[in-house]
Image (cartoon, rainbow, N blue to C red; front, side):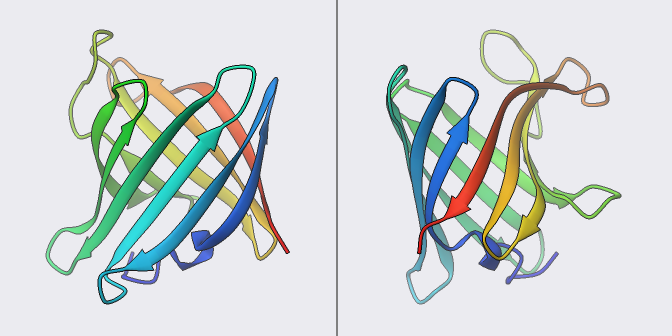
Length: 137
């Protein structure tokens, strides 16, 4: 994975999932070295969140996520054997004491799929939320 791995994500997005919808805006800032995400989930369960992602030549992609539900996670980027991009917590987090990760897959110019997963051991993953991203014109 290199510094251009998140370029597919840049832009303005409509997000849809079972029972909800939202928007996401992703831009490069700070001399194009930081990818900044601003997410908004609309009704029925509104919340907002943001992430900053940075590529380091020595350690790869790192991301910090915060949101209006008081969540804070540090995530590390990697790829799955099928080529999907993953950002996951390197340790167990939250009151559940589970690993969490997000997976970007089925990437095309006009959209992609995203899922949020949790695991008690970092081996067996359970999907908790799936979003379909559609690029805005």
